[in-house]
Amino acid sequence: MNLAPPAAGALRVASYNIHKGVLGVGPTKRLRIHELREGLAQLGADLVFLQEVQFEHRRHARRFEHWPPQPQHELLGQALGMHTAYQSNARTRHGEHGNALLSRYPVLSVAQHDVSDHRFEQRGLLHVRLQLPQQQLHCIVVHFGLFAASRMRQSARLVQFIAEQVPAHEPVIVAGDFNDWRGVLGAELAAVQLRDVSARLVGDAHLPRWRHRVRTYPALLPLMPLDRIYARGFSAHRVVLGWGANWARLSDHAPLLVDLLAPTAH
Image 1 (cartoon, rainbow, N blue to C red):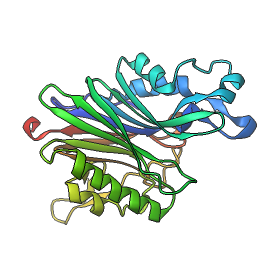
Image 2: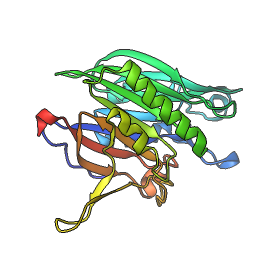
Image 3: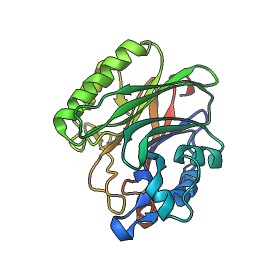
Image 4: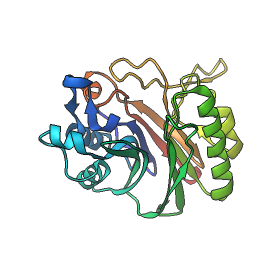
């Protein structure tokens, strides 16, 4: 993907489900975390919201010759020269995985809020406060459940969390794998002034404009808009999707990328 540099004053934000750095099933599994590191470098993002990040997997460590000795968020952060934050969502027999944030800006605090809806899916909100040059920024990394009713309840808990934990005047970015292929959660999130900045505006000057949800899954030929970037205090300058054969070799999701402008940057 050949990306133009962001506009002056723009904040480049990416969301990416990296599938634990491994692609394939059974004997066809291939280690992809090192190639993912190179792919993320191409994005040139200031903030990277990551889902399905492997903290530890003892069986994979024995199977793959080049399995990294450190957690995946540390590997990626060190390679990109970025600050990192991580919290586990799920613990399994062989290890644990969760959400992570990579940031070019200093991390002020890291917190985890459990939004698991039932015992078969462990889910959480990773809340990271960052210090930008002019202000503080709240970043929340999400990975919602596979069932529609669970997603609605998790969305309601996200709204409650923001209303209670984030001052109303402070900017927020919420990004991740919402599994919201029908796009029904946006109305819920509007209660805390979150807007889908990753949706493309389509139409022309003579017709009403409507927002087109960007498809991110599967990566080779995206058919379903599972991933989103919502923001309060920013507007979208450019929306980009990484898809095609090269990205499909890295994860089953395509990376979603948006350049954001704060009101003072217009």
